[in-house]
Length: 279
Image (cartoon, rainbow, N blue to C red; front, side):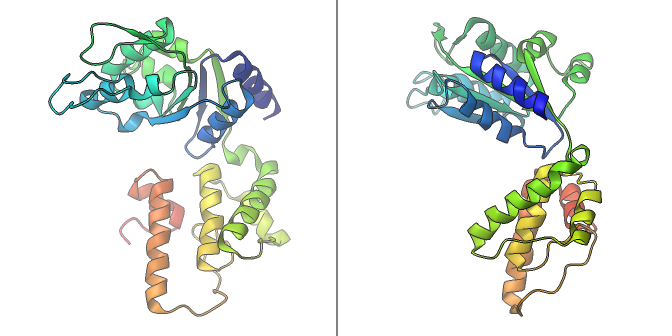
């Protein structure tokens, strides 16, 4: 991670386009926000965009803005993300999921530094730094025709690869300490001090959801007031008896947190909870 941190600091200073890659849950947005703090745009706008949620019909207006009357319902003009972030940073999360129809327009922003609002014949200059992130192998997406090769090279001026947590076992105790302190403060409880056996179990676990899953497991223990439990392991008894209604609420909270962690995918959420998807 030392080399990644060095490249991140250099890339942030020169304000170039940065591509952050890694599995889901490896902290790509955290790194994007760190890049902002390291660079000269730290006091300017930082606007995240989930590219997986963009649709070709609305995304052009959302990203590049529109003029009044440009389409049905456009009662007023809109700046769009890139003009709203002028002098700042646009973070394109899951850029590998960006609709193919939008990719040439993003390429124009990167190459020319300008956008053309929907309904306007005139391009508008913008000054933004773009940080993109993906859990996909964009080289494969290019080969399959789902991602433009020229856009890939433009985005990949500097690539920061986030290793999965299973390859960073030495960092797990540090993350446990960080999240334990964070959630202890949030829920007004003592910070968890893992036993040697518990720490060994956490270090031996593969963490398919990476740092996000570790954070979820620890926060769940504070919500339930139980010892942290790895998926597939029985939860230790709680410190106090909970009424049935509280148990239902806490169970629902745990499921909702798992679904958010898994990006709405029920199978992955069930895996995080250590239960069968049909439960």
